[in-house]
Length: 384
Image 1 (cartoon, rainbow, N blue to C red):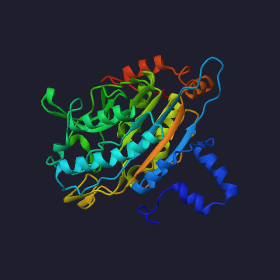
Image 2 (image 1 turned 120 degrees about the vertical axis):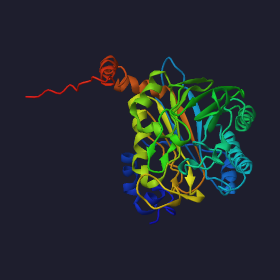
Image 3 (image 1 turned 180 degrees about the horizontal axis):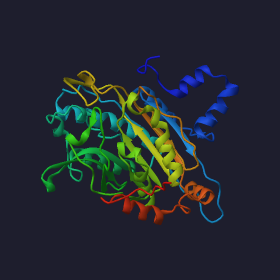
Image 4 (image 1 turned 30 degrees about the vertical axis):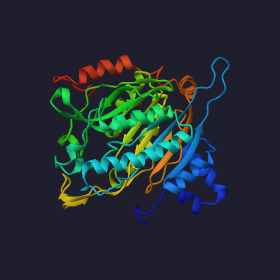
């Protein structure tokens, strides 16, 4: 079956696995069974009319005697680009604003409190091409850019926190470019920004042509709906990166990404889920979808012939919980909105059960890592 028509693992399982076995298979694959959220019919109708996948699941915690449930709804949006990559820059941005605005409207109908968009959502993922122009023209101010103003209007209109990953132009520091997530409060205020900590140098994904490793550390944003962090794309491959957001107290980590099948799909369902388990928090993995064709051929460092595209962005966005459960993924081939209702009390309940953070030997790790990064470091190997 071609990867370009293979819609999702879940649909394939439901088509071919007998019902008697399917429930047990899903338990092994996804952990405990999640309650499906009954979404408003108007939202379902809008998703059908606008041709995007809409799913909703609830992650529930046990009732407590001293704390009320802390329930928040998050929305994960994955989407294709709208116009060809050689269309005028402003036209491309405007078309994506319109498309994503339509999906955010449905998120609002579904009661979403925090919505996160995919990595560099206002543009094609052109960082593979090594070309500077016109791709650097998509860069905007994080605080005062066209896209940030658009997200501020959405946030105020829908009383919703908006996480907007963009290509940032830092005018204060010589016009430097960064891969940045802007966090807009539900009041419409720019709460802050978080820059991508880890830059890939893998085949076509050699993004340091455009920007370097971020300098904002592991910021956590206190919103009205809980503490959130943004671990952009390649940072998901680094366990310590997830850990540090957790050490700063995040309750939900969003992972807006842009990644293609042959490169990362076997890892996709594992990394964010493992991070949720290891760090006693919710994680939200978001990937763009579709094929993006570039007029000029480009080559990568893997010896392959020159080509015009990166491959198939496989979507499959999902949410994972600290108890090891996870939602099914969105479509591999369609735009989508995943609505997840999270009871944040589950974080502490699982932490109290497993004690990963309480039993973590952070003092030991810090001491040994401090030694390991020194030039004169000698591994602690015992020989006969």
